[in-house]
Amino acid sequence: MRALEPWMAPPLETFLDDSSARLALLMTSAGQVVAQHGFTRSLDVMGAAALGAGIVASTTEVARLMGSPAFGALVHQGTRQGMFLSGFDTSRGRWIALVVFGPETSVGLVQLFFERLVRDLAAAAPAELPRGPVLAEDFERELNASLHALFGR
Amino acid sequence: MTAGYVEVLERVSAIGGVQGAMLVSASDGLVVAESLMEGVDGRAVAALAAGLAGRLRRTTESAGLGTPRMVQLRAEGGTVLALPTASDLLVVVVARPDANLGLARLEMSDVARRIR
Image 1 (spheres, helix red, strand yellow):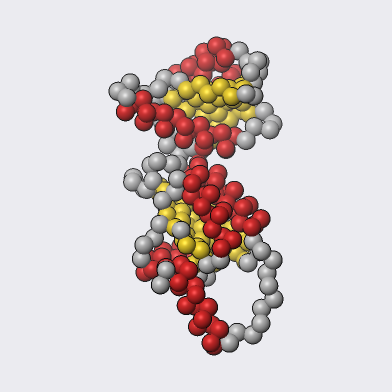
Image 2 (cartoon, rainbow over the protein chains, first blue to last red):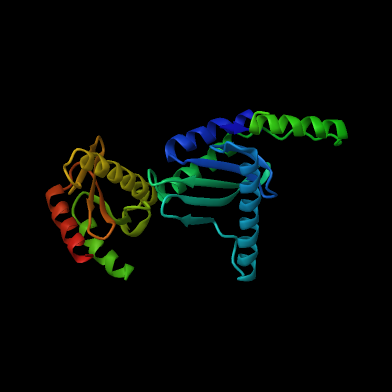
């Protein structure tokens, strides 16, 4: 399990233990990964994040066209594994969770413990620090730190 | 269709000491129909009961005993009953310790027969 910031890890670990999910990806609504579990290749993570954010953006737009509030969650149930995709609000803005689960658990359990994950993340989130101007050297350093945190390189 | 399910579940939840009855999708752990008293978290019970029933089914099948006919989980504050049906549904009942569990089991079997 890898997370961009340490406070994200315990709620996600608890969720993974309780739900028995196989893969989990937390990302911003723009598709920037903030934590992941189960992906072994950075390319897979980035692809899944981009696709997940795209799906949520598409369904949000469909909901808007239908005059409905945004859909709560999207579930694809396959024969060997299922996927749960849901947006949720955090103090850092709107995030998206993509969870892949197998027959050893169920969408009901994933959904149940996902609601607790959202509460746990809200409780664990530190107060936002005031942001200074973005400098080129800071950007590169932070990018490298993020890549190291998420992919260990 | 769900209204018909609720009607039969209400007969179970009307038994003294029974706090609620639900039909739960066994593979998904989602509530199909429910008749619950206030304070019973149906979605949580459904998800956890389906997970428990699935694990117990794998256990009894691994032991060569076939599928469980009934799951009865007794806790300090009451009992959870889960009855698998022929159609990937579970009849789940939450009952207080003073509930007439024998009658509840009879009514659960009747629900299972009706939804076949």
